Length: 132
Image (cartoon, rainbow, N blue to C red; front, side, top):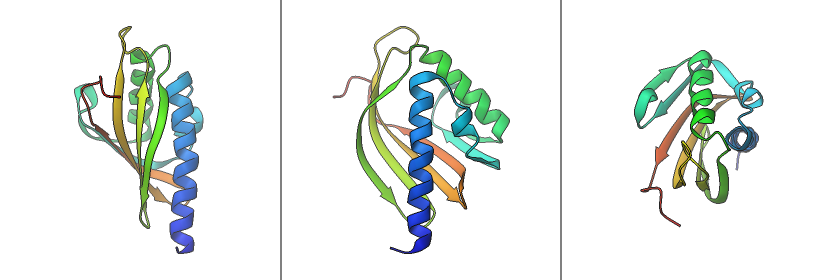
């Protein structure tokens, strides 16, 4: 493994820890601090469907996530981590009340790393919310 690949994984894992903390608590600033100024993210559904650009849009998105999961969304298992020189994909399961109703899902999120920051995020939802 090259030093670039090691750095990519190290930065992405640090960001994922902050992402996980944000999901659980609604405190996103530490994660947002890890984003580049030209950050982009892609989301598969709803108000944020498609490509979104900028840290302000990211802040709006993660605020929305905190509203949907006002009691927090907990990662119940981290199933797989896959990486290359610039991208790390985390596959996990999560659960918690969404808009007050029981919710479970299998998710993959992809972080693109540039230097010591995350420059792009993509999320892929994988189940009907009932999978174990």
